[in-house]
Image (cartoon, rainbow, N blue to C red; front, side):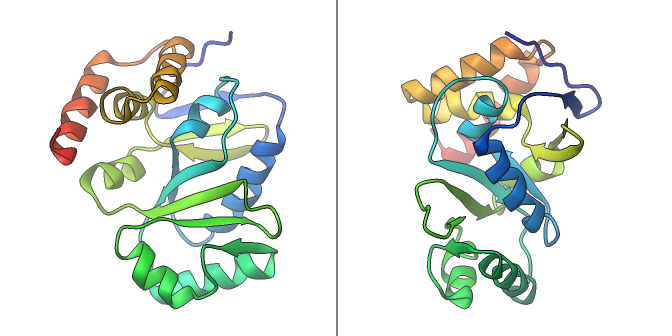
Length: 194
């Protein structure tokens, strides 16, 4: 099993690009023209070598104006993507601004989708501010801090799948900070009042 090391909030890896990676990279290349993003959730452990299926890839994005979102919506739909509903104003006002997520998928293939949410809470904003850069096969993609993802999966979500994802990340990253994991645990518990 490979060992990954993050230095100065950056990591360089080379691996075979999967169909899932291709879907993510293609979609994020559109989104990053409009706003900052950070990948969170199960895809993080999958990207770094865990073998399991997923139906969605979770990301936080920096909130944008409606005008900018409308332009993003138009580019996505013109490129053959579908979204939760066909009304950009409602997606923006009734979903994203209200703290709900929207889903984006390739037309005709809704089982694999990107779940997008505005970063509004303290921890979500911190995820964007402290994201890590992954140099991957000549490009860049951005993930939330690994320690934060471990803490969220271990201490907030706690499902078997999430605990296994967290354990995988703890195994494959060799320079994780136990202090940061403990910090994020406390921040998440305070935010979720558990």
